[in-house]
Every structure is written in structure tokens, then in C-alpha cells.
Length: 186
Image 1 (tube, rainbow, N blue to C red):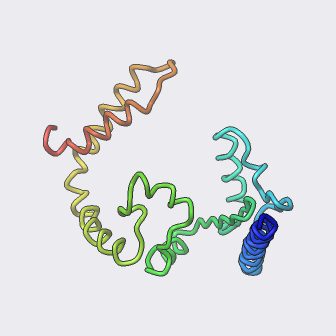
Image 2 (tube, helix red, strand yellow):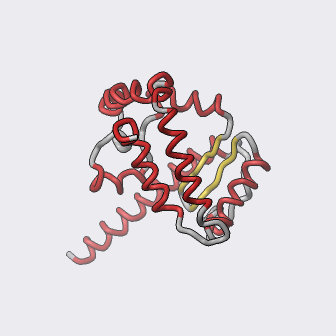
């Protein structure tokens, strides 16, 4: 009985590995045509991003200039395709066929459930239709005076801390909330 269990476990593991390998190969056939830094076997470009946030940002900027307007990065069995032309981004985000979320979003489901960020298909489309008018240029233009006044206040407060190291996060939080509430209180 134990041998049967071990054989089933090994067989399941082999099938899982073969499925992952087949999936990787099918993606690779398409993505190998996209330029990018040369990946190492198994780990891909993962070592390029084992650094400080500043250094990682610098790597993204370097690769963006070197391989523009599109390049790929590989991390193990995961592919990341980065694009920089607004026209390409518009094509990707304008259609309904490109709203399927990657596996990374599944970790957010416990926390956010299926809101605008994590939902797909009709649920995403309905929620997006509800929110889109809120961010229309004419509506945002009504708030430009509040945005300008609040930004000026924040810059004045930052200027008071000249030549000092400050934590900008509390300031951004404070003034973001003031912008949101500004139409009512300012």
C-alpha cells in the first residue's frame, strides 16, 4: 500500500513538472523573439534584482533604454514583458481580452476579495464603467484649484525642513487626504 502511494506521488510530481515544462516551452517559443538581458539557466534574470530598491530601479531604467520599446525578464518559470510606448499600452488596456490577472493577484483575494483590482470579466467591466466618469478630465478640472493649493502647502512644509532628512510618507498621506477632502473643507 505504501509503495502504491509513493508511486502515485512520484507520478503526480512528474506530471506536474512536465506540465510546467510544456507551459514554459510554449511561452518561450513566443517570448524568445522579444529582446532582453541574457537569462541564466533555471533562475533567469533573478540575480539582476537581488539588490537595493534604488539599484533595481536603475536596472529597470538601464534595460528600458537598452532594449526599448519592449523587453522581457525571466524569473524562474515566470516571464515579465515590459513595454514603454503609450500606443502599445493603450492597445493592451483597451480590450477585454487582456484583463485576466496573473497568479500574483491571487494572494490579494483574501484581503481585497474581488474588487476592481482583482476581478475579471463582466464584474471588472461593470465596476470600471462605474468609476470611469469620476476621473473624466472635466470633472478633475473642477478640483485643479484644490490640487494646486494643497500642493503649494505641502511644498511650503517641505521647504521648512530644508537640509534635513525627512520621512515624506506622512506628508504625502496628509496632503493626499486634504486633496480628497479639499472640495469640502478648503
